[in-house]
Length: 241
Ligand code: TMP
Ligand code: ASP
Image (cartoon, rainbow, N blue to C red; front, side):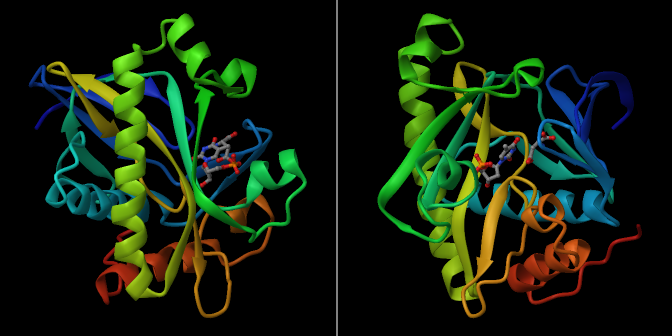
């Protein structure tokens, strides 16, 4: 598949056109940012690891009947995806209090939630991705009420599938962020599902196995992402750097 024009460059990925109008190429970078880009760094091998981990989760979701943009892995840092239009709403699902929810509501990190919480954020870097609610989403025309309903339903299904899959592997799914795309009149899970976009805690030790290690300067970031891959597959990742 030919790599065409660079369509979009984000903080962690680049998206290219290909020689097929219905396919994009996603390239995962090693660069990492946090706190609206105020903290910057590079995580060795993050691109190849997130490419593999995302492909693993997208394939898992597809097997569970959840549509995603994933088509196939075509390189160490590259996956081929359906050419979707990204809906500018980040959907966060939470099982346990952590991160911004802990700060906003003054609840200690680790507090279990009696049912999953779904939140919406307006995908606008210049505004720092503000939290919005369902009526903002519809009134601003970011998505229709039907699309919003479907995104919420899919986010809860993804939560169930990921949580149940990770549990026997000793990983607690604390929370995660999804993005959705429109393609052929359908809503599909897009973007990535990786330790950059999820919180994973080791069930036995409570150790963080995700980007919080970078955000909070805990060290061992590549090691944590590698450990996620090892837990998922039982194998060492074959990353070429
Ligand atoms: P938060 O607690 O900072 O709101 O994050 C909730 C989840 O969303 C967490 O798993 C990390 C993920 N996330 C992203 O993927 N991108 C972001 O820009 C932010 C702020 C969070
Ligand atoms: N990626 C986001 C940023 O650069 C935030 C995060 O993941 O914490 O601001």
